[in-house]
Structures are given as structure tokens and as C-alpha cells.
Amino acid sequence: MSSEKEPLFSAKNLKLITTPLGAQNPITIQVLGICSALAVTVKLEPAIVLSISVMFVTVFSNLIISLLRNTIPARIRIIVQLVVVASLVIIVDQVLKAFAYEVSLQLSVFVGLIITNCIIMGRLEAFALGNKPWPSVLDGIGNGAGYGFILIVVAFFRELLGTGFLTLPGLGAIQIVPDVFYQWGYANNGFMILPPMALVVVGIIIWVQRSRNKDLIES
Image 1: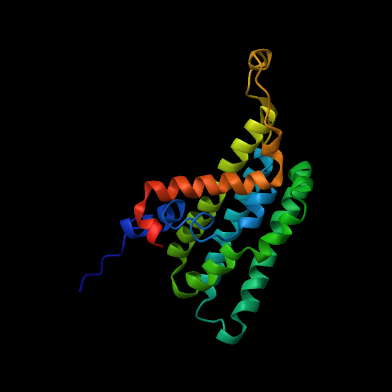
Image 2: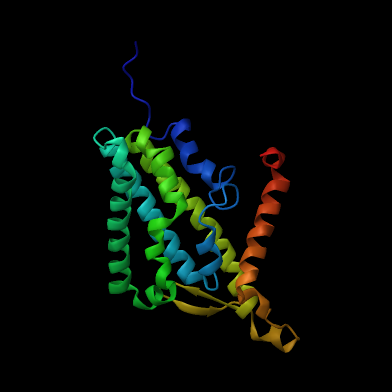
């Protein structure tokens, strides 16, 4: 028997990162974590910060649960998972309050609600409990990135079309639409910053994704 170890970035492992970005995106395909996608995408900055926060929690909760998977009694596994996730969310919350207080105010309760994010608990149950640490880390990166990608895309179009600006961490609001456009008669679409438009933008992304991948229509 061969004693060679599987490469850290083998094709199988890379799929753990790439698949959630497309064919198994947690928001557009699995329809998980949709609430935050609708609530924090009025501006780009909070969407980016929440995306990074969720990725941090998915990666390290997957890693910790995978390391402990053989020692966690099945009857209390959900409790253990919640304790791990809650501890990581507290770290995220305190870091945001210390270094990005204004953004933490914008995110409000949605930082705490990371604890109940279906994506995180779903990956712990479906993957981390049955796989080794390294694949679990990659799975956390992939699902965190897939979630964050949709948030950032939705926030980009909502803020750009709704205000003409984009807010970036550390840079503040940057005007993207030139003043000359407004002089020519261009007007911001105020509907884009209303909550229903987040659902509309997500729906458009789902439509585009499924129209480009016919296999998803049957799923």
C-alpha cells in the first residue's frame, strides 16, 4: 500500500473551496443565512466586515469541532457546537467594538446572530464532525467565502445604484458616480436602499446562476 499523503491542495481539497462559490453556494443554492444578506447589504463596508467575521467563525469552528470530533458524545454535540461558535462570536464582537466601533454599530444584532447562522451549524454537523481538521478548514473557507461573495455583490449594487457611493473599510464613502452624470440627469435609485431590493438582487443572482448552469434547474 502507498504511504504517500494526499497533497494539502489536491483537486479534492480545492473543491471544498470552489464548490460553495458556485454550484453549492450557501445563499443562492442552499438558501441559508439569507436574513443577514437582506439586512446588512445597504452599504458595502458592513457587508465586507460581516463576511470576514462569518468566515472567521466558520473556519475556526470547523477546525475546533474536527479536532474534538472523536471526543464529543453524540447526545451533547449540539451544545458543544453552540459553545464553540458562541465563544468565537464573542471574540469577533469584542474585536469589532475595539477596532471598528462604527461598523459594529451598523451591524448591530447581526454579529450576535452569527451564532444561529444555519451555514455554520450546518457545516459543523454535515462536515466537521466527520472529517479531519485540514479539509474542515478548507470547507469553512469555502462556505464562508461563498456566503461573503453574495453579501458583497448585493451590497455593491445596492449602495452604488442607491447612493452613487461605495463605503470601504478604512476609506469611508467614495463617490463612484461622477457629478457630471447628475448634471446630465442621472438620479440615484432610492428603491435600492430599501429592504425588499436586497431580495430582488439576490433573486437576480439566483436567476443568472441557474440560467448559466442548467444542472441547477433540476435541483
